[in-house]
Amino acid sequence: MYVTEPEVVGVCVRFIAYSCLFIMGDAVAAPIQGILRGYKDVNAPFYSSLIAYWVICMPLGLFLDYRLGHGPYSYWQSLDIGLFFSALILLLRLKYVRKEMREEK
Image 1: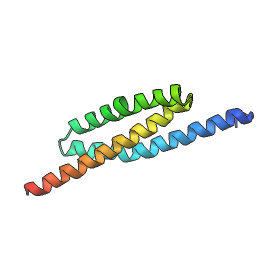
Image 2 (image 1 turned 30 degrees about the vertical axis):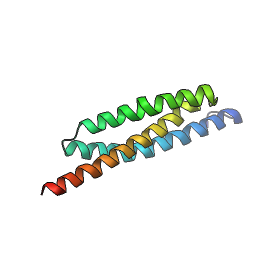
Image 3 (image 1 turned 180 degrees about the horizontal axis):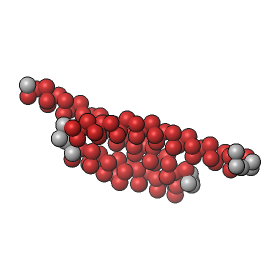
């Protein structure tokens, strides 16, 4: 709409695709965080974010940029992968907490 250069349009399309993946991952992770907080489990969302973003996302982004040469795309690629792992960790924690709640009854 604002740009006619094909190179700029191509870059924008890739960034929009990465942001869509981020939104889909966040749509899974955010409700699970809320559910865990409802179960009074507030440490799990903190640690899952810590692991996902600082242990997985940051080194992966540096690797994708400096070793593989993905450039500015490496930031979004690593964020998407980090958010996926955060959602996975939270989902596993939710299954564990629900199992513990059932056994207490």
